[in-house]
Image 1 (tube, rainbow, N blue to C red):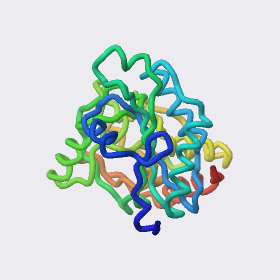
Image 2: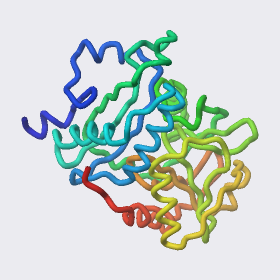
Image 3: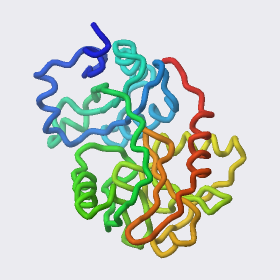
Length: 271
């Protein structure tokens, strides 16, 4: 099979998924997932992805598949595709989502692959919307609100949207973690957020580099006193943000370089 033909894969429990298996998933809303970028058949932060899936499975299904089993399914998809690709591993219940049976069944694993992505170049300008995602700590499917607010932001002339919680704190963006810079330290928003795997990679490598970090509440009226801002997700460790709502933020290129340097310091492992 050619690289072009094999880059788009869908496998359930390590084997090609049939249309009969995929059709119900088009309407499923009770599942969680993790997304990663594969480069040279290697993955960074695999331990973080496995931990995310394990914790969310225990929360959703009361049980979790062994890490070794999940890793084998991911490896099968990586081995069957090109050296560089995007990969998403979704954990779902085969017994439906609205019955008691879904509470007592071993979950299944859908692994999908596609073209690699490095995200937008930026800089980005974000709108600010009052929104708090349900089950914030879990990366779950079925969040129409994120896409709705993205589209609404674009119609208003922005590139994307950032969320403000009921206490007036910036938390995260539609598919991104937010991060800020005061010229000396990296500042992570203190609010209910999904702790991203890229975020965790950057945090532990910044620690190793000796860069100070702290968690603080960030309101819109504080943005003018900061030296930089960025968004990050599985695509990229940092895209500059130069505005949120009507608040301008300096494009801190050294800050963006620092985030990328931290990510580059993370070792990549073959599965």
